[in-house]
Length: 271
Image 1 (tube, rainbow, N blue to C red):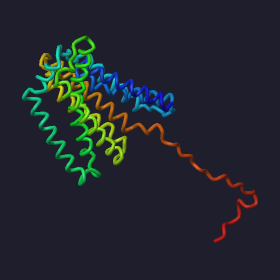
Image 2 (cartoon, rainbow, N blue to C red; image 1 turned 180 degrees about the vertical axis):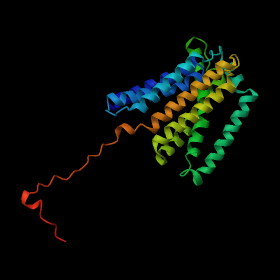
Image 3 (cartoon, rainbow, N blue to C red; image 1 turned 45 degrees about the horizontal axis):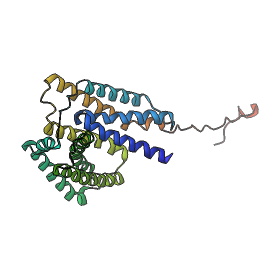
Image 4 (tube, rainbow, N blue to C red; image 1 turned 30 degrees about the vertical axis):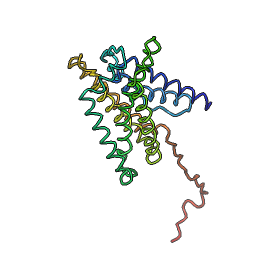
């Protein structure tokens, strides 16, 4: 059972990696909330964890928000070489974003000894900021792999190896501080906060680097944002109320009735 769970997790992560290759990050990242829905539903039937009415409402909100994003998501940019991704990554706007992310991460790392055990945002901020860069590197490496499988070798360019090394470094740093956060704070609190911050920074990074919203009008962008907010509401509702259906019912202890004989019913009580 353990190996089956590990295998399904590996397959899921590989599929998630491949999704960034064929779709914009602004579409793939918010849809991670669907894993929360499937976890809640499977836990209801397999682990016998009761899915109460608020859990069902949270699932519905996540589905509605996901459908809104899918229907109005931007089209994937056609990329024919890793050099094209490198030109996007070295554009002035994304360089400024990367410098700000690195600066904020360094400041948060310096604040860890003093505020790490009392402020959740320190650990989650490091993971979320580095996670946005991780997703951009994942997309670049995924595109390189896809083009290489199609016969156009992209690993002969030094840019591909820069993206690969940066991806490994960001993943290791992100995993390190996420584990520290899980050791320090409650998982039920970390999960929704991390999802919100990670998704927000990833969408921002994708918007700056790939300019996903350049070809969309205001109504499409507003609908995507509304869908994202709806997913956030459903995610918070699921996590905040997930233990309501599993609370143990307390049994009331009642004293057995005292049977009195008819002779004692009319006797006066002793002072």
